[in-house]
Length: 275
Image 1 (cartoon, rainbow, N blue to C red):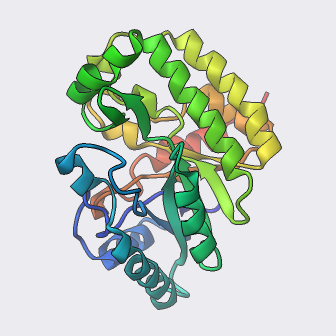
Image 2: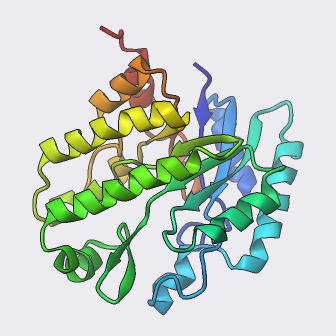
């Protein structure tokens, strides 16, 4: 099992940290990682979200994407022989504007080695809402729009399934990001029926097999007080392993000291005997 952090962020993340990349990579080397994927958020369409403060934090401006790609390629070159740096992006599922993402992929596909494809947005009060922004925003602008948490969960997994189908076309390595992100604010929201989540995740498994799309075993939920657990259930990892669905650890680090957090948990899951 290669020691690989497959989901990380950089100074190009406006809701993250402005630390230089060397601090992330040196930390990864110190922890014994052999591969490290830089997977920054690319731009999203203009007026995708009608919230100026949030808009400024969501993703890099369009004019910075070439700078990020050059930055990632430079780190790959500079750290050759020390750690394998792979150039990636965390693309967003953007219903109604999938062509926006297609243009990014078309332009940069020769450089892109890894894609994490994530569902962050749901329709809500006033338009698209970022479902992992704050618990208060979820309660005010998402939950009332759907009426029940069950309806929110079903909409979320409908989008995850559509995201898997879209991702299947990509020629590079691809995986679905933090598949249980819907549980980020679980302690501050009405309870979610775990049997519903399990049923929806069971329905995702054959789609992953068919599409040759992997899973971002994202541990960031461990460090979120309102979640307290990884964004991938243990039983789901086991089923993915049985079906030979690629499972890639992701720290989802937004600052250098988050690199490698939760690796021991991931390693334990991946080494468990399959019955």
